[in-house]
Figure 1: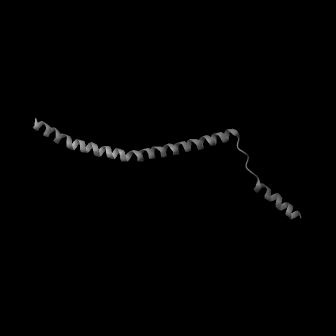
Figure 2 (figure 1 turned 90 degrees about the horizontal axis):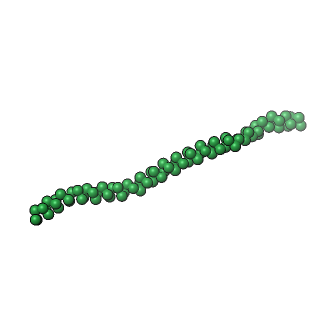
Figure 3 (figure 1 turned 90 degrees about the vertical axis):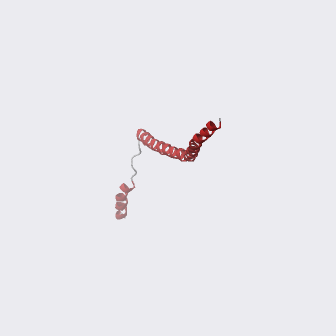
Length: 82
C-alpha cells in the first residue's frame, strides 16, 4: 500500500499542468498569430492576382504586337493610295 502511495506521489509532478498564460501573454501570442496569418493571406492574394492577370496581360501584349506590326504597312498603303 505504501509503495502504491509513493508511486502516486512520484507520478504527480508528471501530471502537473503548466501555469496558465496571463492575459497579456495570450494577447501577444494572438497578435503574432494574426500578423502571420495576415502575411500569408496577403502573399496568397498577390499570387492569385498575378496568376489571374497573366493571361490578360499576355493577350494585351499579343494584340499590341499585332497592332504595331500592321500599323506601319497600313499607313504606307493609305499614303500611297492618296
